[in-house]
Structures are given as C-alpha cells and as structure tokens.
Length: 121
Image 1 (cartoon, rainbow, N blue to C red):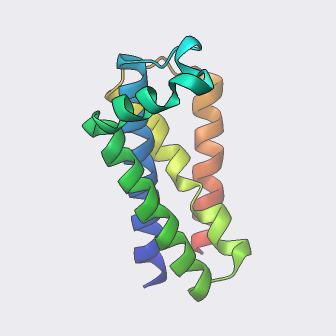
Image 2 (spheres, one colour):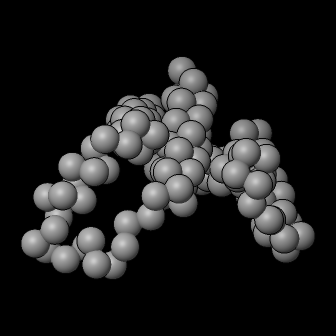
C-alpha cells in the first residue's frame, strides 16, 4: 500500500506539473494582469483553462496521497522517495514539451533516481 501511494504521488505530481507548464507557456500571465484590481479577471481566465484546472486537481490528489503516505511511513522515507517525480517530470518535459535538458541536468536526474533506488532497498 505504501508503494501504491508513492506511485500515485509521483504520477499525479508529474502530470500536474507538466499540464501547468504546458498551459502557462501557451498562455502566460503578464505582470500587468497581476495587479490587485485585475485578480478577479485573471482568476476567471485561469478557471476556463481546462489543463490548468486539471493540474490543480492532480496536485490536490498528490497532496492528499502524501498525507496518507505520512500516516503509513516515516517522513525520512516519504519525502526522499517522492523525489522520483523529478525523474519522471524531466523525462516528460524532454519528450512531450520538447525542452532541452543538459547533460549536467541528466546527471542530476540520474543521481536522484539512484537515491530513490537506495530507499527502495
């Protein structure tokens, strides 16, 4: 059950971040729109963007799954193992968003993956 929660957390976090990045690159919010007198319009605009709404929903699932994981496992396990989302996010960003990922960043991703693998033992 503990690893199922980890899978849910990693999957929903990665997909939520991917959708959020996709939508914000497609329709960025400008500094002018962030003035307090324009927040209502910005929030209404954001609420009509289904990828962003889905991203928020996925992040909520991730949050509640993380809370459940903390009830079953130690914090010293839960936080590092959910860093596997970094690995998945980097791969998806490279493949789906066509982001350029440097060799140094891939080395970091590999290091995180090795750390998660050590926790799994």
